[in-house]
Image (cartoon, rainbow, N blue to C red; front, side, top):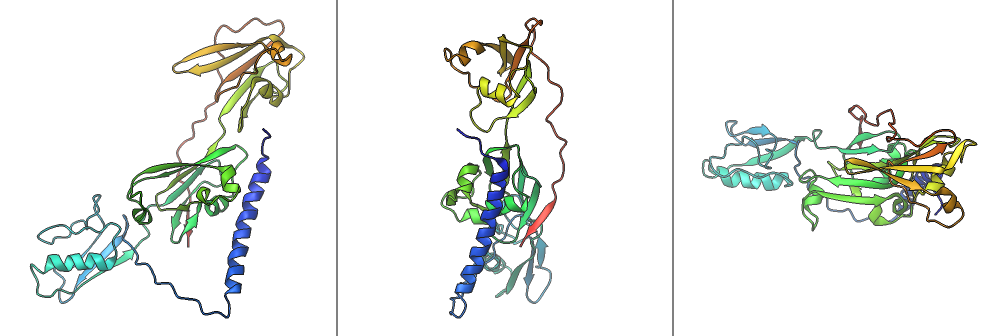
Length: 326
């Protein structure tokens, strides 16, 4: 299986996005001179984080301003009865319930409910192997590919998968779906996204956590020309790993090749018969993420303990920049 060139992948993403923009302009141009039906606007629904203003005509003692409680009710609104549920409901529907509640106290109450601030809604986060990891405040519909392009595209160490995690109750769009508003994890392959499959380019919702997975390292050390860690995007075997590390050095001891592999809480060793593999008399061993392949060097004995690699992949947590998509 050939390895995809990361440059070509990033360039293709940009070309696809430009094509989508051109298609939108073309569709708009073809519709000129024709009478287009005006779609009925969908009522704006109330999300967590929205600031809600409730006004009762003729007085102020029953007015209220606040946000939703964690359970989705108008937090602190005193109706002297059942609480009023507001999550993923329209302003008019909420006002109708408040009227029903206030009829116990007032004669023919007139209630107006308005969302006066939507800036505190949950943001979508795009992180991982992209050039500019960031958060997105979505004020319109946006798809995965568009956000990847806005984040500068994928990086050279991107693997083949994108993970999309959707927490519950953060998007009212999801509340209308047959699956309901529950948490979900979806894994999308970059190959499917680039091939134009609709299912691989979903609409991103408020609160979504998107991670472009990076490649998991395999380490090749010892008697090779370029000891290094290799980010494997496809199946990686011992001989391919050695080739990726510049091939065998002059001092390489092909009779002393060992794989150090973490297995649970322990490290086990796998001896590799490299000469037999090259002669076609043994199977080339498939490597796993975080394997360490050590090529022995002439004049040096076998290692007694597993090698210790310095450096850490842990990064200090940072606050990602926020971008408004409108």
